[in-house]
Length: 381
Image 1: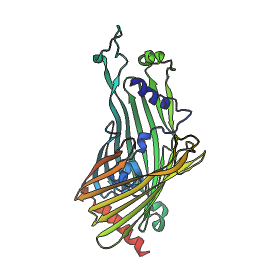
Image 2: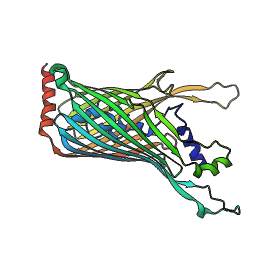
Image 3: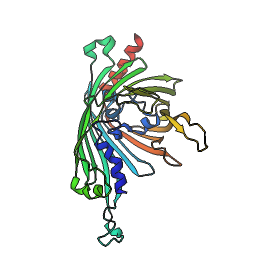
Image 4: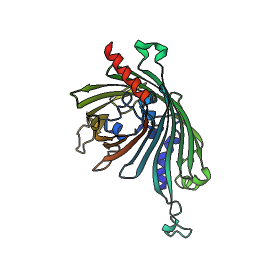
């Protein structure tokens, strides 16, 4: 079990030359609302989760303090994903936020000493360890309307993230990493547009390997002992657009679409080239009096090959996609969201149940008035 875990982890330690899928725990997504809408949130996020999705959108928060939290268990409860964030207003034109993410696989058996010196099984010698990924995200956003003037800049904001990453595999290996994101958001009438540039600095993880702890196992299996290395995360760009509609005085609809561009070679996505690949993410939200919400999403388009066991039969290729759905309830300052979403697709019942909470304190009249003024001015144009 230990050897299997290390062989799975080892490719990441050599990813300086092949950085694809580095720090992928930061690409899962946060918040049940977003997961239900297949992560099409770059132009939609308007709460504390914006620190993750698009820090420029933090200025849409109309409260001085806002908290958000989520817990999810993936792959049949093997992996636990936890997220918590706090956003606060600096003034009516700027916000800051702090987010913490943890993805952990706990209680992994260490069977290196399962056999004692006499060659007998001794289950008391089994120890346990955890593989843990942490990320601390510090976000800042500010309205820059005055730079561009009222007609164009009134709905324009910019933002950025500074990320500190900590990854640890028991006592065998650990890493520290750092990275920067930048983002913009622009509101035009009922339209919202967002651009998120993740890891624009090329995020790196500096891995330190405890070779003394691994030498015996790797020598027995004739595997090369890994050394200290640098793991790089190449930039990715997410471009999003969304629009809200009012069906009547009580029912509204929000439609959102994101395009995720990666620059680390071919991926199994809808459009792929040797230089860049990109995939769409689509989300819809229906609301009743802005208190009850129903959400749908489509994403994760992949090409699958199906091999036939019959002699002479040719392989079949087809496309698959991942549907998601969820609901939400707003009870004054508390928002409860639920998503039924598929992460691993490795079990007979692969869907995961995700809950998240958001709680707000101290509404900001100035912030509310500013947003309403924007809407009124845009409609009067």
